[in-house]
Every structure is written in structure tokens, then in C-alpha cells.
Amino acid sequence: MITQIKQTAEFIAARVNKLPKTAIILGTGLGELVNHIEISVSIPYKEIPNFPVSTVEGHSGRLIFGKLGNKEIMAMQGRFHFYEGYDMKQVTFPVRVMKELGIKTLFVSNASGGMNPSFKIGDLMIITDHINLFPEHPLRGKNYEDLGPRFPEMSEAYSARLIAEAKKVADANNIRVVEGVYVGTQGPTFETPAEYRYFHRIGGDAVGMSTVPEVIVARHGGMEVFGISVITDLGIEGVVEKVSHEEVQKAAAAAEPRMTLIMKELINNFEEL
Ligand code: HPA
Image (cartoon, rainbow, N blue to C red; front, side, top):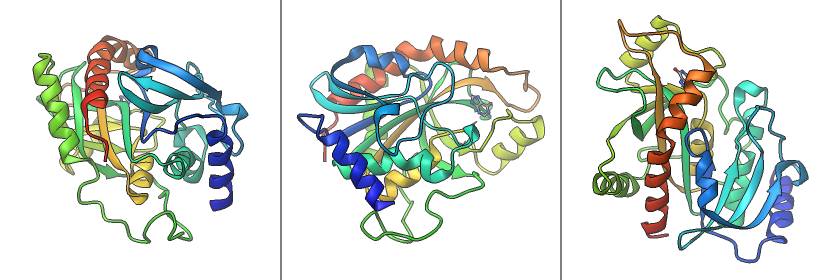
């Protein structure tokens, strides 16, 4: 695995003039952020050695380097989901490569179903913590000390200082944000009413099918993480309605300008470690 990570990082580094310290995974709700990046290098995933190839419709699948405001950044346009059939090592491989390239801070976004009764469709939820319910762990197997410790510490998986900064940005721009715990599940089914109820009772505020594996690997590698989720549907007792991929896309698109603004300002203003 280490050989592959190094090989891929070398391939990328050879094409990029100035390597950034900040990376963004452009998940649902953040696709449009790409239009704010002054792109200097763009590499389709299919050209990158050892990279999995994106399968989901509408995910262009490329790695972007450039400037977002005054920050040099690297962005993943299109991520790899466990439900697509990738194993956890493949899902999280790009995060390993990020670390090897010198990334210190990772920003992620996703869409999720809200279970907290105070949430509304279209809300932006700053992820304060997560519950990992994926059936496979990205760190299972031999641990390479060069990548991180055998038993990583997870008491502050999502950076408290970045959460505070994001709330300031939202406040200053009159954008409603909520905070909560993201439950990561494998999908691809949306939840039954009983599952939503269960995930809420165990401490979740929203549930989705991504992010947790990438965050675990980022934390394993000592990266600082910030995540935000757009609530695209509700799984609240008595309020569970039919949900479709189209509705998720529609609600995410409606929230996109707010999500983009928060991420853009946050990334522009935060102090790199
Ligand atoms: N459940 C799981 N994943 C999701 C949901 C949901 O309700 N909404 C968007 N992604």
C-alpha cells in the first residue's frame, strides 16, 4: 500500500508547481465550488495511477489544484462510495495520497437525512462528530506506523476551532446552520422508519453514506478535519416521507449557494497549521 501511495503522490507532485496544505472533497452540495477555484492543474482520475475510477453519474472524477481566494488548495471532484463496490482501502486511497502530498487540513461535504426533530430540509449541519456504522473499517489490517498509529485517538475528529470559525462565517452572512452527529452507513438503501428512529436514538442527528471512512483515514494521518452536511430529507418520527435520489439532488442544489459561501469564506480565512 505504501508503495502505491508514494507512486501516486509522485505522479501528482510532478505535475503541480506548488503543493497545497489544504484539500477539499467536493461532495454533494459543493459541486459548484469548483467554479470559484482558479484552476492551475486538473487531472482526470482515470489518468492517475492506482486511483479507483468514479462510477456514479454526474461525478466527473478529477483532481484539481489551484487557488480558492488566497489559498492554494487541492480538490477532489467526485468521491468513491463504499456502496459502489469499492473496498475501504480504495474509498480512502485519495486521502492517503493527500497526506503524502503534505495536506494538513481536509474539508468535506455530503448530503444526509435529518433525524433531529428541529431540522428542516435544506438546513446545513456542521458535523460535530460521527458514528461509524460501516461494516468494514478502513484501518483494518496491517498498520503502517508511517501512516499513523495502530489505535488512533478520535476525541476530536472534527476540529473544534474550525467549527467555531464556520459558525462565525454563517452568522456574519445570516445563514442558518445547525450542528450535529453524522451517522455513516453503507447504503445504498435509504432508511426504513425504524432505522431512522434507531439512528436517532443512538445519538445521530443525520445519516448518510459517505465521509466517515475518509475522515477516519484523515485523522489517522493527523490531518485536521471540517465537515458540513446538507439535510436533503427527513427521517423524523411521524414525518418520514418517501425520499428519492432526485429529491436529494434537488434539495442539495437549493442549499448549494449557502454551502459554497460558508466553505469558501472558511477556507479563505482559516489559519493553516
Ligand atoms: N439516508 C442516507 N443517506 C442519505 C439520506 C438519507 O436519508 N439523504 C441523503 N443521503
